[in-house]
Image (cartoon, rainbow, N blue to C red; front, side):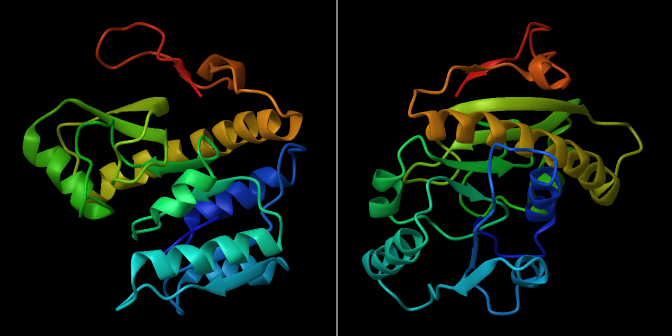
Length: 218
């Protein structure tokens, strides 16, 4: 799991791991020495490391990242609030085995610089009535990979950034572990992941745009 901040999505993955037989969080990587996610990992005995990205070529960061992942035979990458670009060599090595979660319904409100409260500020400023969370494959750009699953959250008239962020985060903490289960099961079995259906995991499947089932192919 890659994380730059406090690691609440990491914690959700760790909590789910305790009742899931599909994956184990083996390594926590951050670009920040003081990231709370590192302490969350250490507190449950997981390997952690910091990979510095400032003033380093992306290719150099990529080589170090692949070395760290290879050392522990990491099979799947989950980005959980990681704010740095993933080097192309890592994306290529983990094609369809690397996921990210974003606090909005992509492709809206995504891209470089769109993270944390900035996303919710933009959502509220736009006047849209629905936002949510998106899990997508990682590619060489920010938030442009193929969408795997989305879960909608209504925007209330009295919402502010804090209240909206809280409700979206609750959704993230349920959605991400479910998608992680699905992908990791397929990777371990050596098969192409089949369709991910939210209803399999008792998650809402109503599309905010069409009212149709919002299942995506993972």
